[in-house]
Length: 75
Image 1 (cartoon, rainbow, N blue to C red):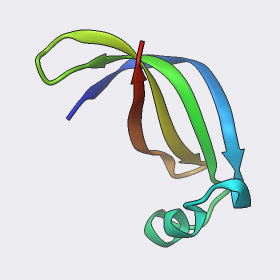
Image 2: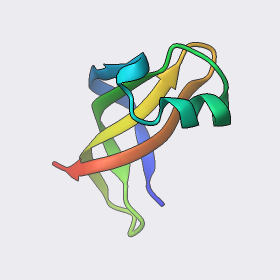
Image 3: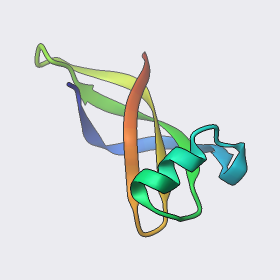
């Protein structure tokens, strides 16, 4: 597993509400909210202990916070 080292920069919203494929699953698992899919750039600590920049994606809702953070590509 990788560890995200704050801050996350260049944050952009990719999709909101019904445009998110997993919105039903997110609501069932984490609760109702105005769900957004976002992406950004952050330093990530890899399993071997190195720090590397990566593009990460996650889902976020007000009052719930960031969930399902995932490294999409290494920079």
